[in-house]
Length: 125
Image (tube, rainbow, N blue to C red; front, side, top):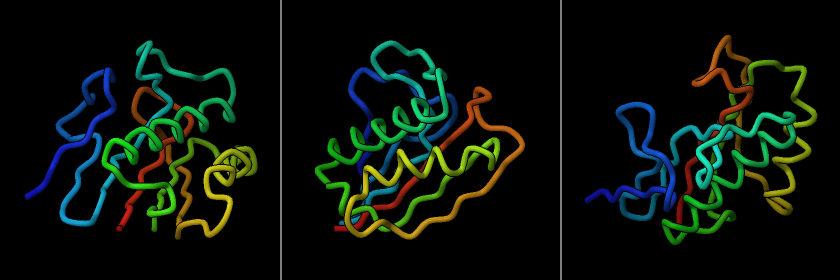
């Protein structure tokens, strides 16, 4: 049986998907954008602040599912511009101080709501 996980107070997804799904000992987190779940506003002050908001959304979903950030085994990062790679890495790496998950980073032409970064992940217990 699969269980839907969502950030308390967050706006509904902008498409036909769940924010995250738990099945058995696996957590699948949909791509998170820099949307502040309390205000409903996009955080776009800088790529660093946008990435921090994305990662905080991931932390909230992981914790809501009763997983830990150390359970994350795979991330996918989608960037509007690879010019932001170093700044995204600086923020991203602070959430994985020990063994970082496997990952790919790709540049895409456009992301939902025209944001500069989106990150998804998979966690296993």
